[in-house]
Length: 191
Image (tube, rainbow, N blue to C red; front, side, top):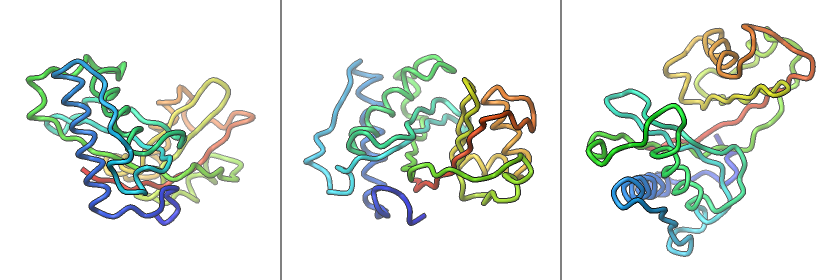
């Protein structure tokens, strides 16, 4: 995963991002406020622009997941913002309540920039996928969805991974509409 835009982060840097996410969730849920860590308080790699997703799980079940595919702000700032959003603004879930905090598992994924895949069919896409490594973005008109590389843990077969991604995007199974664009990215993960 050497193509992560922030460079290969160390285990300590990834752990620091998880700590930022946990603190941001706590402050949002308990204090009802947005917390913005000072990038100057963190190592240089965490001050660089970075794309990230923060995932919350409770008893193994998804409880919130919000992220961005574009690196537009310091990574540490993006993690704090996405953590707060995962806890309070994921439209699939009610906001996290203070009583849930002790049971939450918080993880952070730091993404590389998506790179277009030059494929001409669903079959070609399936054949070039790297299970367990690739995150994917699919776009076709107003249809857009992404799956993080960690989704491979739940959907290890390429066909199942792609079929679920197509459903998430609102596309017919295995369809290949005109103008479809598919990009892949990698991620470093902690938490």
